[in-house]
Image (cartoon, rainbow, N blue to C red; front, side):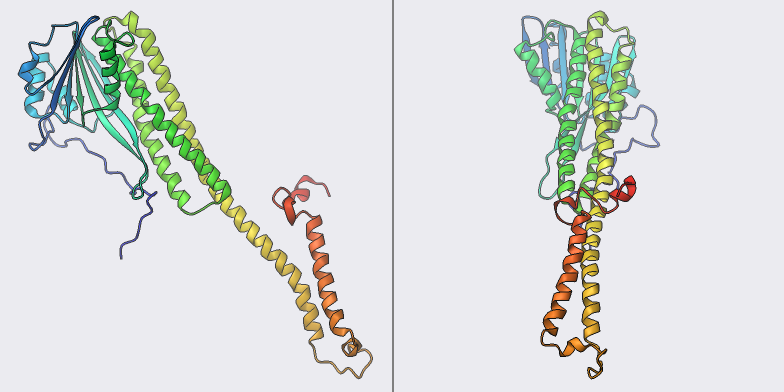
Length: 388
């Protein structure tokens, strides 16, 4: 019979997409059955925006150069024909095209001549359902910049980070319409970084809720939730760390309009650093929550043991009294329990038991082991402090 897995416990090891192994360098790892991607073009300048969807890469040529900046978006995994067409048109090395098609890349940046190439990873948090816990959805974004042309390759299409930049272009908000293609590449990078803040904040809120739940009522399934959140934070760290390096390296490049981009890139670096600090802080909190859960469970076990000890301590003398009066003695002798023949002997025995129990309860209460002071005044407080 198969064992049931908690909905908060993910598989032991996440299935990672591996690169194409044992192939010649420059091999494009695209399956023949991959559906054709969608092409979208936004060409813009300070006073005009032209947006169009295309079905053939050959239709791009009349649009390139009509306005200062042309943004070509490839939505969906690219096929061989499309990648080869872009490689010929923009003079891209086959190794770069291989990195674009390989969707298991880590964030990185390369700058050669006048060609800028970036690999980014966008992420959002998939909400929790009754069957599955909240999980991290990652998507690779590849960015090519040459001259006034920016080409983005979106793994799945309709990426939220890129849609934010498109809205800014359409509405003319910010400096994107009056800037060059380098600023557009920065805007894409900055939007990807900004979208990590809600993800990290949502995980932090879950950790805060878990802390409250553990303090109120520690349960076994909370351990699985803590482990799952720790894995999500580890995945975030593995993405955000190289993203921060991408921004830092970009500051060293002699890019066009570098004097204008440098303050923006420093701001993006600050965002990446803050993200790393938040992730590291949440990872530390997750580790502390695991210790807190174990401590809470141990405290609850200690409270149960203390309660049982108090009950046993009270009933041991009562059992002793009952066992003494239950012994068979010859009552004809004056020293052999004469009270057994007394008219009030039964009431005497019960009163003695009640008085003994009351004495123990009073002693425990004075020591702070019972009542409202029990939690704040543990049994060994005075012995540890040297007072009493």
